[in-house]
Each structure stands twice: as C-alpha cells, then as structure tokens.
Picture 1 (cartoon, rainbow, N blue to C red):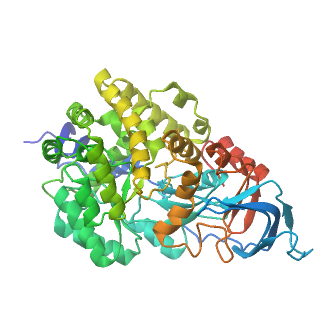
Picture 2 (picture 1 turned 120 degrees about the vertical axis):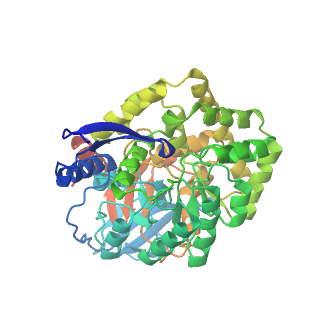
Picture 3 (picture 1 turned 90 degrees about the vertical axis):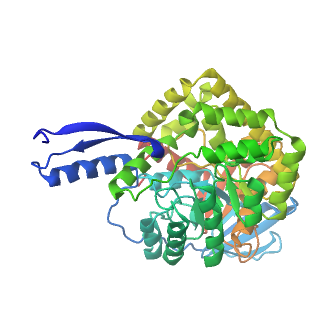
Length: 532
C-alpha cells in the first residue's frame, strides 16, 4: 500500500533532455495541494511576461517637424544628398527639397541638422522582447540605440490576441512591431505532421505573420514548410539536425537564423556530408514525446528550455560538439560556395546574429563581465546568466576549443554568404537576458567579418523593407514613407563606427535628441531593467 506520507521521486525525462522533481501526493492527501504545487512550479520556470490587465496604449499623433541642412544617405546606392530639408507630419515624410528652396513656415518647429547624416531607422530583425516581463524597458532601450522597428521571433496565442486588441506594451517610446509568429514549433506542439499542419492552420487564423521553426524532426520540418506555403505564410527559423541545408532552401525555407544554428550548414560544406548528416539525424537535440504530455509538464520543460537558451553551448553534448569539429576538419570551400549559391538562387535569407553566436561560444571572454548592458539587465537575469556562464567554463577544454574555432569560421561564412549575393539582415537574438547583444555590437562584428559599411547599413534598413515587402513605407528616406529616421554625426558609408554616432532619432514623427535618448537609458539603468 502507498504510505500516507508525501513521497518525492526524481523523474528523468531523458528524451526531453530535462530532469523534473515531481511531488507525488498520496490518495489520502488533497489533489488541490498537488495541483497548486505543480502550477507554482510551472509559473516559476516559465519566465514569461506577467499577465496583467492590458489596456490599449494611447500613442499621440506627431505634429509637423522640419530638419534643415541635413545630408540624406541613399541606402540603395550610398550616394549623398547634402543641404536638404525633410518635412514630416503625422508620422510620415511630407516633403524633401534643398533647404534653400523649401518655403519657411514659422509654425513648424525646425531643427538645424547641418553636418548631420540622415538614414532610415535601424531594424533589429531577430529579438525576443515582447515575452519578457520588462518588455517596456527593453523596447525603450532599443529606441535609444536607433532601432525604430523590430521582428519579434517568438509568439503565442496570447501575444497575437493582444496585438489584435491593440494592448501590446508598445507605447510612444518604442520601436514598431514589424512581424511576429505564433508559438514556435517544438516537439511538444509539433511532434507529428498532422499536429504540425493543424497548428499552422490555427496560427494563420490567429494572425501570425510567419511560422517559426524551432526543434522538430526532419519530416516535420519539410512538412511545416509545405503547409506554411499552403496557408500563405513563410516558414523560417532554425535548420534542424539531419536536414540538408540546400534542400531546405529549395523547399522554400525563407530565412535561416544564427547561421543554422548548429552544424547543418557546416555539414553541407563537408566532404563527409552524407555520414555526418545521417549521424545528426540519429541524434536530434530534442525528441518528440511518445505521448501527449500534460500541459503543466510542457510548461516545466519549456522553462528549462528558456534557461538553456541563455547559452545553448553550455548544455551541448560532447558527441555533438565532436561532430561539429569533424565538419570543420572536412570543410570544403567549393562546397560551401555552392551551398551559398543555392541560398541566393532560392532567395533564402540569412540573419547571422553574430553577437548571439559570440556570446555563446566566447562567453568566457573577460569583456562580458564588464559589458555596459549589465547595467540595464534585471538582477535576476544577471544572476541566471552568470550561473549558465559558470557551467560553460566547466566544459572540457576540447569542447571550448571547438567553440572558439566555430566563431572565427562563422565570421568567414558571413563574408562568404555576402560575396555570393545571399540576402542578409541584422539581428541580435536579444531578450534582455544576456550581455553583449546590442545591435551596435552586431554592426561591429559584421565589420570584422569583412562586410562594407554600406552593406551593414543596408542590412538594417533597406533589406528588412525588402524582406517584409514594405519598400513603399520603409527602407529609404523618401516622400510618403514612415518618419523613422536616425541622425548621425558622421558618414555611415565611410566607417561602420559612424553608425554608432547617433545625434537623434525620429520615431513615428517624434524627435528624440541625444539628451532625450540618454535620459531614457538613464531611467532604465536606475530601475535596473524597469521603465515606466
């Protein structure tokens, strides 16, 4: 017979890659207590944004504003148009003309922008901000970096509903939400082709802009691409273990994030591709459970996954890193260029997120211990990041050597993709949980990879507009387009460092001077990640 006392046993869910302590309460005890314990565990590990009563943000409409004497940078060609005036109103660019020829209007506030360079607002095309508790602070921090638009790379039915209702935490001091998916496809919600198809159809109904693929089997991966096409949505995200990167491009995978991640592209560049690909298919990062697991266990598991995502490298298995090393050892430049050509021919975009890869693979570098962004991170996020970093530091030296090699190769791969004409965009994967992932740090890493200042500027302005099909409203400074502008103190086509020299930002027609931006950042630092 079962003892009347509570018993605690460790249940190892090996196929899910997690260990969960579940308290088994005897039949003599109240099931209410058991449920409360499980719910508390679930909520503590989910790490999601607090579900508070939401109200539509009342964002005012900007009045007229004029900039005189500014040099406009053509993001398509890099050509400069000095001595220009830009008239904006109600969040749109109303007129552009040489300053000497534009009629004065004393009722319109005018800013002397002589010696400044105007470029479209920056876009961060890979972030996880809306699902964080401190999303308002993170959004304001992005604005201080010149970011006027972002692509949210994780969603949920709740976030999609908030967007439909206009209750997302996006107020005046925030970039615009450009696109958002529904729930990321994982073995928990997309363990089979039929469940995947049903989920994609549901996300289409809920208003998702794209399908984000996370961790699924190769069979489900290609089925997801096909079903997404069927409902009229692009499928993008992570290449899966055991998937041929070239076949993924040909099937219509729209965008590859983090140069993979993992070893999929490197296996495609290997002379031992068939063997390594077969081995990868036999050892997926996460298997689908053989049965439908209770929702509370799914929440517990996803809570563990969130911790892993702080730095996946810290949780890698030695055999998987050894396979990556074998791919490096058998790397063939010609094969890699051929793969890049297939990406270009199939319009398969890439968002390298080099700062994300760097903070995974080189996180033991001393610079991260003093990174300025630590001042704007929540204390609990800093604590958890340090715990995961300690775990990384304890990995075998051979594993960390492979990671160091990986990053130098990823810089070279980014340059190779650029040379092959593969369309790319800037992104950081930042969710406010890891230092060293600002968009400006991404600019510097792209420069280290050998990309020109103009290309980096295009990757954060023009290319996002093209990817989203919104060249009529963003990507260049032209009449009729959104009044999202960054004023720089130096020519961004001459040096990537000039992309950092922000003099002011215009977001939806509202102007933020350098002093305004510093005040925003200061308020976030004072609140350690909170902003109101």
